[in-house]
Amino acid sequence: MMTKKSKFLVFLTSLFLLTGQIAWAQKKAEMILTKWADQAPVIDGQLNDWKDSLELYNNTARLYYSLSNDNENIYLAIKNNSRENLMTILATGISFSANIESNKKNPPKITFPVVDRTPGKKRNTTEQPEPEEMQKEILSRIKEVRVSGFKEIIDGGISLYNTYGIKAATGFDSKNNLVQEIAIPLSLLGLQTGNNEPVSYSIRINGFQGPAVKQERDRYNDMYGGRYGRNYGGMYRGMYGGMPGGNYTTRPQSTAIEFFIKSPLAVKK
Image 1 (tube, one colour):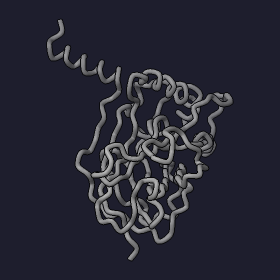
Image 2 (spheres, helix red, strand yellow):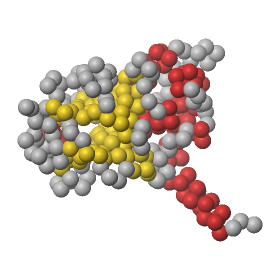
Image 3 (tube, helix red, strand yellow):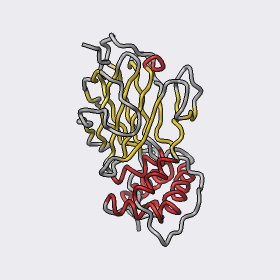
Image 4 (tube, one colour):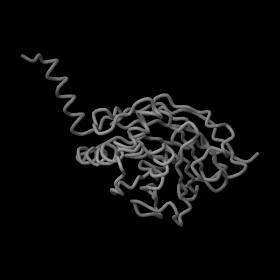
């Protein structure tokens, strides 16, 4: 016979599995100093232009990151070295927003990467592709950025080669860590340099959320548990020390993780 405590734990577990809406969030914002970009970084999914090699780190999200700006854009670089987060990021993306806190309740936000999960050509599953080949295939499926809350842009997906000035790129570094770079025009965010009021930033690893959580998980398994699970599972075992494919319950990161940053825009000295 189940005790009240046991029934309550079962209820919480069922609620989590059905909705996927429990999110881990760092409530207190990290105070940092955004750096001035003497030269705009090339948005190519590589960290060659980031001299500090992403010295900032958020322990909750297990992400290295760096922020800079010039008079035209905000630049964000992120490096993920967590195998638990990797496949969630590829499935649901990272969302990034920036605004003056007193001005916006629902600030402009972009979500990236957005991986095309349309089934591709079937592989010979008896042969294990090289990690570089599998990384190349993943990157070839990233073709757009998802946007919301921008006055000038309709909510939804826009091409990586858009005319709004938003730039984004993904890559893998020499240690097989996932790298993301993003540039957003200050004008689209309603921001300008010379204003000392802190900008509020949010970086969020999206989880599987809402009523469609089962459908999302099924699509996730189709991609990573099927063709990608068979082929990419081997890559992740070699690259990250073990990432079996084909069973969602082995994917530990299904909730969203969000952290917040505050910093005034940098000014040229």
